[in-house]
Amino acid sequence: MKTKKAAQKKLALALFSMMVPGLVYLIINNYIPMVGLIIAFKRYDYSKGIWGSDWAGLSNFTYLFKTQDAWNIIRNTIGYNVVFIALGNVVAVAVAIMLNSLKGAMNKKIYQTVILIPYLISMVVVSYIVFGFLSQENGFLNKIITMFGGEAISWYTTAKYWPFILVIVNLWKGFGYSSILYYATVIGIDASLYEAATVDGANRWKQIWHITLPGLRGTIITMVLLSLGRMFYSDFGLFYQVPMRSGLISSVTDTIDVFVYKGLTQLNDVGRSSAAGFLQSVLGFFLVLTANTIVRKIDEENALF
Image (cartoon, rainbow, N blue to C red; front, side, top):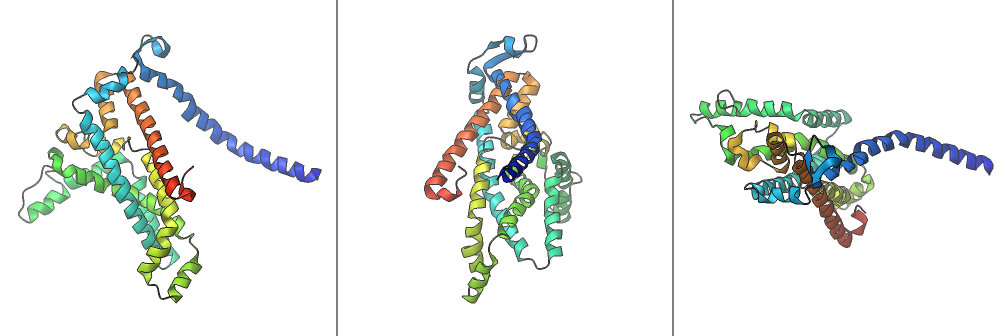
């Protein structure tokens, strides 16, 4: 009995020792910096420091809603994220199902590697790849347009094209990672279910509809809930680097993050920038709580908590 308890304590000690590095990193990187949230409520002065700066109350929070571009940046942030979540998950699920349909382990590994490459590329590099396609003088798309007698388009000064461009770039860069997560769930579905469906005469589409998609439901809900937590954030590189910081298309490319960055670099107002980040986190937190509550009422097993 003592030997068994000693073995359990030894195992627990080993597990805790493995946890310590990650826990220390979490505390240093995620929790200690939270003390800096006090800056959001202060009129930060570099000469006085964080604790010596004057209190600003909630004025740092209200500036976002008082600017002329307030509605525009909030609309862009939420609107793009809704489209990214919807299309991103649909495309990722479709690709995961197609990966599962491939024959041969080598083919699956090759395709998984190929679709994951864009996710690993820096957004700065992606911005220059996009520029190679959209450059007015030497861009690939304009070369094709002029080849067929059309007139070259000034992509970086025409706002109406950019909602589609940004959605396409986001999908191209991110669908590989998400599809592999879904693929890991697909391959975990009991193969006997497909065998039974085949015996009952179900074709491939019916198997996907009645077996694969229900099997993916929990993962889809989890991914959507996690994405909702970032609803008020945006990929800074996507909205700042890819449009090449063009002010002529800012009406469709500026999001809260880009607006705050521009405000910080131009006005050097740390308090307002901190307040915007704090507000984004709080709104995302309540959005996840609300969505999770709804999911728990409909399907308690697939709720996050």
